[in-house]
Image (cartoon, rainbow, N blue to C red; front, side):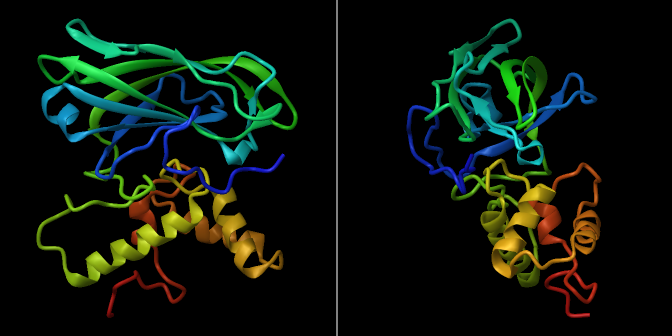
Length: 256
């Protein structure tokens, strides 16, 4: 099965068009020890973050680490969003459309309108889906807490939602730091094939193999990945890519 190289930013039966400047939200799985074959991504527009009334984006992405895919011969994934008293979500539940063919890896994306007199701190999401890999396919339920706060110290989406930092960064940044941010964003754009705002080891490896061929040192690449993954969560954020040392051990933008 061929994996999609990059989803397009447009409305379709499976995806939605998203504007620049959405804020990536903090997400916590209820059972982090479980295996999650689908990655959840949640983002909020400025109005939702400031007032509690606005638009919430949620996207579900098959995890390339597990070579996960949707099985279109089974029931499609379904989310249910539970909100605090006084908070309305429309729609608070929905099922995805089935993708092309018997299986695919395209993301399933949704807009949800949130209405509240005050900003809620948390929303709770339940995902029912079939977790499918080349070796298995089973019905699963996963639950998450979505917090209406920045996932990564003010990180905002840009362009095609690839985790670039927006204009809301620290005041007084040097020209070198701003240039480093642009370089990091370019890397994220090139490597983040499933457009979830993070780079897995598999995505990094595939990108390098595409440019250099299969003759690469996998162990050396793994050490490189681990050195960049400063929070040891098994994935690279835009900020980690921005601050990654170059081949001589210096950070990008450093003149030392």
